[in-house]
Length: 213
Image (cartoon, rainbow, N blue to C red):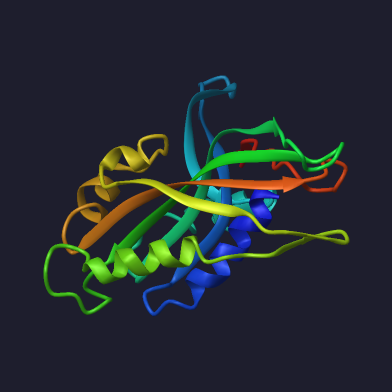
């Protein structure tokens, strides 16, 4: 269900004039780096990690460079995607029926902007861009789950503008040094999603596991 909610938010963001590469909920793609000895033996020396959308398969991730889709790129106006932070909590829903539970999850919207391509001539993102993104995240939604309409409550927790947003990914030095400085800008918006649903409904909890490329 979290992935479905993120997909619905993604559709709202795609309507924004600053939207370019927008993905829903992501997971971490792991690309293994190997080296070969003189006798032909190959062994893994390290791993590289990248954000990829849930609908990217391991084959397309590796063969079609899908692991690079959500990397900051000077050819794009923006890159926006979502990460789930921690597990989905399941609480009792008092007075809501025998099987109904409350599901609560924390999600992060990561947003990178190319100020130059957006026609912004100064070194920060105008506040109306940030408020617009906030508004698109908290826009009321109705998600169909079988014969039930789920209406999630979404509340903004806090905003971060720090390189640590990208620390779990294996971006090279050039990306860090060039794509995170002017004329580029980045931020993360952490928000909480809560909804009531019968857990027998399919697709309630999203399991966001790593994918090996």
